[in-house]
Length: 554
Ligand SMILES: Cc1ncc(C[n+]2csc(CCOP(=O)(O)OP(=O)(O)O)c2C)c(N)n1
Ligand SMILES: [Mg+2]
Image (cartoon, rainbow, N blue to C red):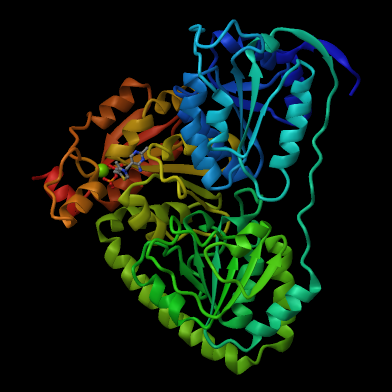
């Protein structure tokens, strides 16, 4: 804690180390040399992504599976802006990634003088995406910025943030001390809110729980996390079904009687929510990017558990707000409801839930048919070991129509999906970050032939870091979803057909293994071989779909 007179870069590394940051994802440049020197001097590991967007997605994946703040380091201008898309993804999905970047110097020789990497207003660009952006003004202030920013990032709803250090301060010495972060404990539920909510739902006939990644809390991937057990217990007490957002997969067992599944893309979802007489929303934005069919009708009784007060007014008319930690609130609600709930009501609700579970399963199977072999292989692969399976997903049909609904996740598994921003090229780097942060887990990324090319360079980073994981590329000859949308509008598809590389050969050129497979059994065998080997493996497969029939085979 004692004051030291050191460079801004040294203040940064010292503060990060004191905050327990053991690894950063970063790319060095002329403006951040002192930062890299100090990170190394302080024993902080550096992972080398091949693009700043990859760095951001890696950090995002690592943060999602650990619930802990992850740090990326870029240089000024293009590098920081390259990371901004990834930070947008983290912001829209409430993931705590901290960007550290140099900025234009404090003492600047004038506007637009053509300094290397000059940006007119870099912090304004960051502020357009992030709510927490600090530009420091002295070397010693760097550690204060770290302490304050981490305090905010570790309290309440987690979100990404940025600290910009004017590049002249990075190498300038100045006095400063450590300012350790202070974290606000999640609020426990208010008894009165629990009591009135419990009363409202105890008599429900058709109760439905909708859970989002907020219900996972900061729970690390593993057997039981967040409010998973409590959510299942409440569903059992009520006879309610549970619908999950994409990123809440792994909160509960997809095969449980109470689990209707991650069906945010199914057209029947509004019928289900409209048929319910009570909805209990736990840690979910109820956002259009999570639950696609619009509008999503909600019943008169809506109980909402969230730690963000603003969410209480967003995307729903909430009759019973419970502003509290999901786990504690769900547990308290269950205790109260158990005391009041009639057995006959639970039995009747259970039949209603079973009916919807089977309707959703048929609809999911029908929408997911082109990816049935993929999802079946992933379920069998997941079941073959006790360790959690983490899927790094992408904005491809194979993920949102296929794996999201079809893969049977177990409690503790994870589906890292770029839901809010819907970016492309997320799955592979997110998977790399997840594996580095959670080495005991098994990691499979699933990407389309289009999206994968956005960040395929990160396969080289995975090889270098010795990351054992699999990347499955589902090839339909181009931007399949967009092609279908064009056709549905009556347009002649344009700009969507892609002549891809020889994916397995590309992987081998980067030092990874690369194979092509046909069918479920060959895929499963390749997944097992990849898991038994070292480093990353790319598995290429083709898709038998409407888009594939035209672009791949047409
Ligand atoms: C960064 C970014 N650019 C463009 C898009 C628009 N977009 C959404 S889906 C898609 C097609 C992706 O193709 P692919 O990964 O092969 O998946 P497919 O649709 O074929 O299943 C595109 C271009 C996007 N979501 N993100
Ligand atoms: Mg495609």
